[in-house]
Image: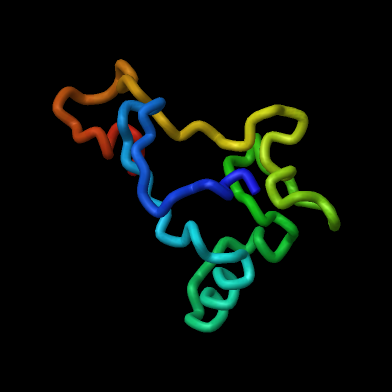
Length: 105
């Protein structure tokens, strides 16, 4: 539901013009899991333990039956994302590193 308007590719002006690519944006939950099982794609075992949306350990919990899949992210907060974006490199970064290296890509 939180990603209903996501396009396959878009510019995120709010985060420095990052290009966000979402190749499965038009796939349903069922299509994704059918592909995973049909092609033996490895996945995080937490999905089998009622974690449909997995983030860091501080912001993720299992989802109870009937809850929206995103309720397991940042429960009790208005946000649903961990915040992996970084506009400015931290002081400890080495001069000349690529931007991808600075954000851990």
